[in-house]
Length: 88
Image (tube, rainbow, N blue to C red; front, side, top):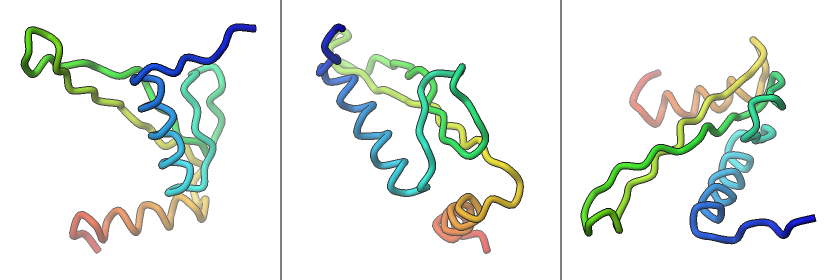
């Protein structure tokens, strides 16, 4: 079995998954075949070159929360997010 990758991009993905798990208390998946309700799906990142002849890039990770209607953890997450953005 091959060893897991430990490069900067995979470390970033692991840190993002750990943070999302702590915030939402939901399972985090990166494989679309493993999607089930009540999980967070991290899609493939996009790269934007900022400077340095392509040596400095910005990475954006699209994130989707897949949840059942009325799931209490997601309601708590959405309420805290609305307060953060100034919506009540």
